[in-house]
Image (cartoon, rainbow, N blue to C red; front, side, top):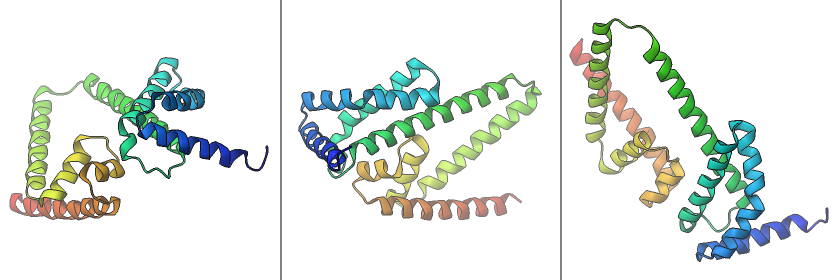
Amino acid sequence: MPKNAEPYGRNEDHALFLLIKKRDKQAFTVIYQKYHRYLYALSLKYLKDGEMAEDAVQHVFVKLWDTTNKIDIEINLKNYLYTMTKNYILNKIRDEKEAVSLNYIQAQPVDEDEGILQAIEDREMIDLLYKGIDALPPQKREICIRKLQTSDSNQQIADKMGISLHTVKSHYQESLKMLRSYFQKIRLMLF
């Protein structure tokens, strides 16, 4: 392989990415054709299903097109697409495990009264959690809600809120400390 082959590939990707940022469909098509097979093979390796693998690839390319303006121009496009695909796959696998776990729990025989009481306790805990979140300062509250209700990464939350990644991380950590303190006070009041 020639010494300058890889940088040329990156330079070509960079030029195509700049065109995609300007909503150039031909540049997007070139990127799609260049990386589709690579991302499909990666997805198929972990998802073990052709349709799911194709869905993963389509999701990644749609997300690339939709979020191009929020992406740093200096990214390595191949690595970025790989990371997007990996995150999608991990979320899919996690969701399937949760569904299997939920189906298992639902299939277990449970004393009806115990199940009702547990559901009430769970609902009360969720209500308490949201009351605690509501008491947080506005920016911390928004970060917590986004973390709970979406599968957005810290970087995506930072982009959507127009703040730095560091701010998202530090606010989230501070929020968790505040919520722990809130729950300790509630526990003291109950016992």
